[in-house]
Image: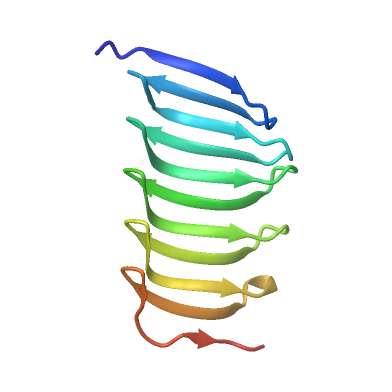
Length: 131
């Protein structure tokens, strides 16, 4: 192996533009995708696998969602945000399966419901909150 680092830009017929670093023929580093509708995604890769934070942005630059990856599996927290930047939904994952607390939020960050998962299966009582 020669540790060669390349930066590749590809334009696709659907209008999306992909900008990716490759090391030894595998994605390595930050990959960026600009979609035709103006949304934008940044994903971190390590040796060809998603590894680190992936962030999806709206056209105006505000964050739609973040996902934590490790060895090409969701491991950690996935969060989705409303147009005002408030967390709308949050789920913990282990090896691509919900594991731990999942919460949905009303506006102003009030918890709407909460459920506990264990390896992708609901484990306990789902709580719903009214304000």
